[in-house]
Image (tube, rainbow, N blue to C red; front, side, top):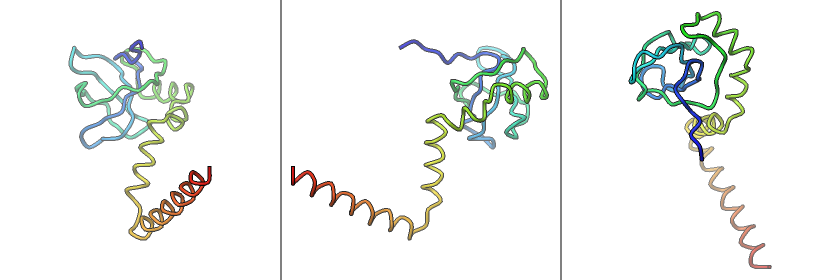
Amino acid sequence: MVFTRFVEVGRVCMINYGKDKGKLATIVDIVDGNKCLIDGCNTGVTRQIITFRRIALTDLTCEIGRGARAATIKAAWKKGEVAEAWAKSSWAKKLAAKAARGNTSDFDRFKIMVARKQKSKIVAAKVKSM
């Protein structure tokens, strides 16, 4: 399998550490071998220099030039439909499912347990009858 996620201007990344953890941003410029300038004007991330260790690269890119302004990035996100593409990705779906599980109450977890038991009983009966 060929590696396809390169650090490049216009690459959409997710911040995995700090106060903006879990938010998307766009790489606007590369400072050096360890840092880049990001801007997440669509997601509430301020323009800042961040190390590569604190971001995770996604498969999404948008067409912007080096050092693009916030308005240009917003237009590129809208034109490239980055938010919609992110919502359709399996990565975003997994994060949403994890957040939904984290927000369940004790009674919800009990209902899930009961449903899981009922499902396994039906499956076991079907396998036994085969």
